[in-house]
Image (cartoon, rainbow, N blue to C red; front, side):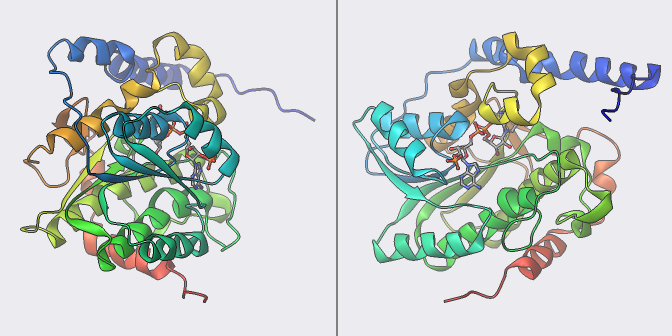
Length: 324
Ligand SMILES: NC(=O)c1ccc[n+]([C@@H]2O[C@H](COP(=O)([O-])OP(=O)(O)OC[C@H]3O[C@@H](n4cnc5c(N)ncnc54)[C@H](OP(=O)(O)O)[C@@H]3O)[C@@H](O)[C@H]2O)c1
């Protein structure tokens, strides 16, 4: 028997209204249009560079790949569906070029195979954009036994980045850009909950924690590679009308459709970072609409005692022994 949707209480209604009042003017296209009045045009000369964009066949990743190619870069787009990648390839315009790699970021076996292909091909990457991010309503496990949004959003990208660095596939001046989400603001880091399974599963929390983990991980890389030419950023795109939003938050999309950002608007800060390579003033901040912003906006989230070392140890504990 279908259960009737629960009626929101006054308190929850108040919370919802204050959420929309606070964030809609900033995260929607309204904020983008207001801020862009003060922006310079992105020069966008990426000739000679190689970018790797995970999830680079549609949405924000697709738009990022398009901008890289339009600026002359060779862009390696990674996604699961080869057919979608091919269709995307027919729609992009040079002078740069698109290379396609089929891999599932939720599977470590696929990531190792991708790394081997890149290394065997002598690839060097100047800009790595860790873009794939998913939110599941129900708990779904990967074939490797991990919660899918954890495996995809943070663990898979951690392994990819760790190995690209270790194998020196990332150039000496490479940038790594994590595409996080404003959804991370609600969540204090609890490392033991990252791969949350069983009864306590809540898709929005699993997503928020993985997105918070991206910010922390970026700080860890920044500290580890301080003084080298490599730089690490985290950004969030605002609210963008993509397939993922339609799938994971249909009600949110239906309510805000008219003011959601277009894909290029969500990708703007990624492309701007790649172009401007700004000096980051505060380790652990997050970029949004071309500006460095704090990683915490609520009082409860900085109270977490989880450190970067805890996060790294937790991620390492989930890296499976490599099968050859
Ligand atoms: N849209 C928003 O409003 C919003 C807001 C905040 C943050 N973000 C963040 O922005 C990023 C991009 O989101 P989006 O909305 O642009 O997503 P999207 O439109 O759903 O794009 C998904 C892309 O990722 C690929 N993909 C999905 N799962 C994959 C996997 N397991 N392995 C490899 N590729 C995979 C898809 O291709 P295949 O299906 O072929 O694999 C496609 O290229 C995410 O990190 C998201 O959390 C988005």
